[in-house]
Length: 319
Length: 139
Image (cartoon, rainbow over all chains, first blue to last red):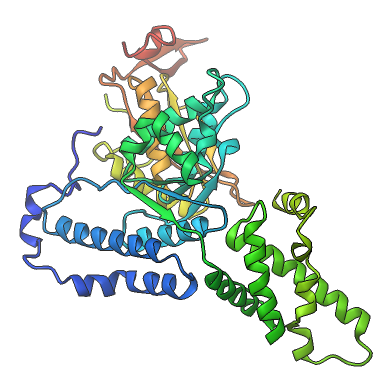
């Protein structure tokens, strides 16, 4: 069945159609990588080291593609990655862009992203895990499998944990079906390090380790304005300084989740704005009034009062 | 005797790339692709054993090739086929079916004659393979 492969790239008859030179700039334009990278720059604020790494990866893949066309490279490069960073630093968003990038470069055929956590891979009883993991892997084939909080797969305290079985299948498919799917593991930096230490098979199969830094206060302020802008809201002058104040206070409190905390804060500010308009409005409101977040909408946050039971509420919101 | 059933059975054996291309066509049409195997090659043996579930929500045919190869590991000495089921109203039927794996040695069929009343003779065919019990066919 598999011995005759007339379509294989290594067929001797194809040698003469191979180009002798390669124009990397043209390949860069043609593949649409430029658009993905430009979009990445435009829509993602900060994350300079991440963008640099993605640029490097894109360059590597373009060169590899050119080498393949000239018959110099035969093996598919290992593209599995690990994204480490605190919550809310844009790991999932970048994974989506990465899937798009790999699709445009032709390293994955469909370019869809399948996001899973431990629950989707690990079964509840003996014999449940392997089919479950394989289902997920099959669904991700032709695209990118994004495993969020991957370290939960490995539970050292329970030696009968089924996570180990999922890890073994995952490793096997990552090795044997490198052409078919790209696996991205994501999670907090310190716990991922421990996970890789106890599963050396993963570390050696992952070529690209990308670290996501925390956003600084100016970047978060910029992010908050972009988020509001996307929903056709804006801050007034007082609200902008209140937001800057909010960000520095919120960072010091527990469960700070970078951009996600900002999004939650803005959602609550919109709620308060709606409430305020409802109570105060006496006549017809114009578009300006409907889309302005004022200082009062933000200052009402519990964060400014020490954030006592904010923890609990945030926790509930996160779940 | 080479078994001629389903699509492409007069062509040389399909490679994994061919299987992928055909399965991708079926997936792109919105059909559910599944893998089945049997060791009874009779043409009226419609229902083969299912290998796993039909793949309803896999966008890429690599999953089909993966399952075919998994099935070959277990049932490499039997017939394996890939079928595509179209669930749209009015069809609700198999739209594609092709053999992707066959035993190394296919003994073929014999004619069986049954004499009836008068001088009537009824004819049927029987695979030489099914003279052995299930599981021992095709060595």
